[in-house]
View: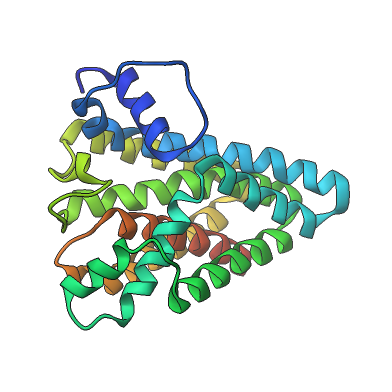
Length: 250
């Protein structure tokens, strides 16, 4: 990475809708940006945790879970949730070409709406049942680790479209950004384990891995690669897998 600070800013610009001071970013910055996706994910999770704490003070666990989830939706502009819905809308297609055509359509279909509703409901339900400090810790850890889950797709698959919003990572990911992303994700889990406990943290990672693998079954073989929507879906289902596994452990 020639410009790591610029790459980190590019990751923030790409993954969130929160404004930054005007900076000059080039294509190589966005190509290196996946190295900082987990770090940006942790920061998004911190925003969610702050909203969770506010909701807890106002009305307890259920309000807290709604606040925490809503805050991350606002921070990202529902960027990843949109990808989740598009991927599930595409599941009714019989060919890869038709699947990508449906996924590009901005309209929300029945499959996508159902998937989005279920995933958001699972997030809120899981967070509401976790103890306060566990939920507060799980949010940044899950958001950081689930962005690493998406980076792993970039590193181990190929971009399936000729063009699209994820085109800056169409060439894959370099060794340096991959190392940075991996170490950041591991660090997030390691720090989280101090509060969650080692068993809960490892169980969360296992749940995340199951979510990662299950989501890839929906697109890898059919598309022969990934799209930006697929990355969003992997992030969302990996995040939910983390929460559910921690809840199961407890």
